[in-house]
Image 1 (tube, rainbow, N blue to C red):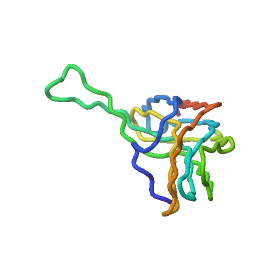
Image 2 (image 1 turned 60 degrees about the vertical axis):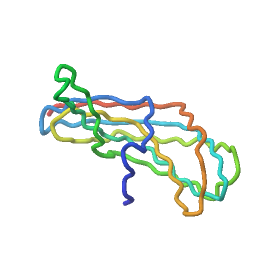
Image 3 (image 1 turned 90 degrees about the horizontal axis):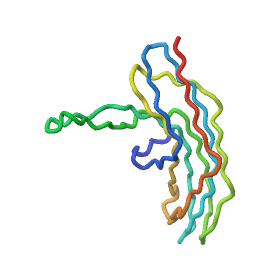
Length: 153
């Protein structure tokens, strides 16, 4: 598979949820959906990879010695638990809108270790050809959902 991009390159939607895993047999049932309309401008012929993912972040606290009374909650990228990629080739000109991209993640099971986690529905754009020059102007999301349920065994 392809290497994952750094976590800070993912663009979060407003679909996110926190879960607590308290036992080794706990399972997280996850499903999601995202419809998006993307507008781009390309100054040279470009190939665009659109990634839609459900990413898991570990929730921890960052206790600063100088400020013990107010620990900060930190979200550390942990793993991409589901991903769909769409390749659009030969894109030129613009601003141009791509047809709606509908992504559906049917219910699947994740089994992280004991801890606190946040799951996020996120997107990522990458120009994949070396001569491409493309800017995503807008990614307008329409129907979107993320459902999480922890089942204790």
